[in-house]
Image (tube, rainbow, N blue to C red; front, side, top):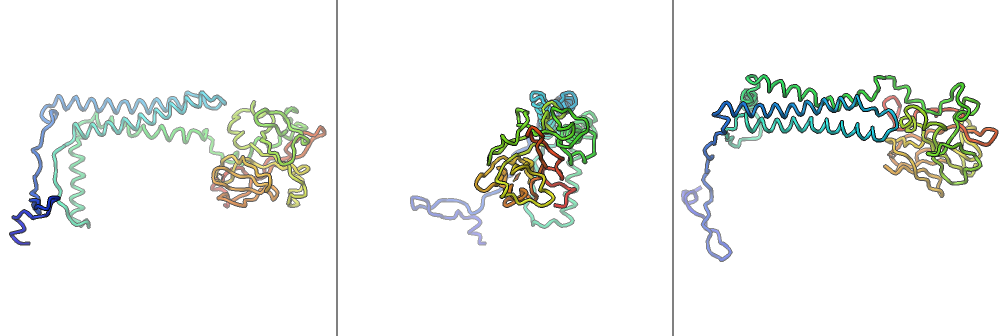
Length: 359
Ligand code: FES
């Protein structure tokens, strides 16, 4: 590069056809003089900033504790929507304020107490040699030293407490919702399971659960299930049962009547339908959405979430979409008065595949 280039002002035509007197390189203007914060020279102000930060961390701690207390105090077992909403609100606020408090306090800490001296780092090749790594390590160490954590034990306690408690608002409900019961075999059963000595209003011969309309909870006569109509079904008496919503989520069933000649039934399942009426789990085997759309012409059930399609004339096998397994079938029969009941529980767990399944 010639001297002329260094010193010259390069002539580039401007809009008027004249020359713009721009230098080829601009001088590095350097940094403005560092402006010290009040807290840098006045320990009282630094102390006040520290108290503010501790206060914000304290808000985070209280919010996290509030979320945890709310989780334990607000019962959501009963089918009470208000309680569920309140619990969700308290958990959300606890988690949100807990995390927000940590974030705001960290920003304020960096602004008010950490070293804010401007530093310049020249550009360098992208590869990080050992010298650079060593430099990075030293920078980290200097940063930790500049944060003055060791000299501020209260602040150290506050940040430690906030960081330790905030994740609990998320983790405790997650683990707690297992109800301290790690026996997952119960997921394999539903409210259709036959019992002994059941209420005759709910159980045929005190043993087999009647099918009932959802949500009316009235028994269903086979004669009332007309061709190609879809009926949403729950076990009779389920709304009065403990853990109603959880049980309903597993036990909901779709009932459809088709021409019996269309059904391709394996010999083992020949007795699972009644006069063309078949009952299948309503829970999609992909990720568990309710399968609620019925195509009368093709006899396909369609899941609206990702369009998995099941053929109810052929054991509800998957004919399209991401689901890998057929919908579980509920074996049904009718009593002397023509009411439908389940002769057994589903022969496999309903809903999405999980780790204990082969697929
Ligand atoms: Fe039914 Fe995905 S949940 S297709």
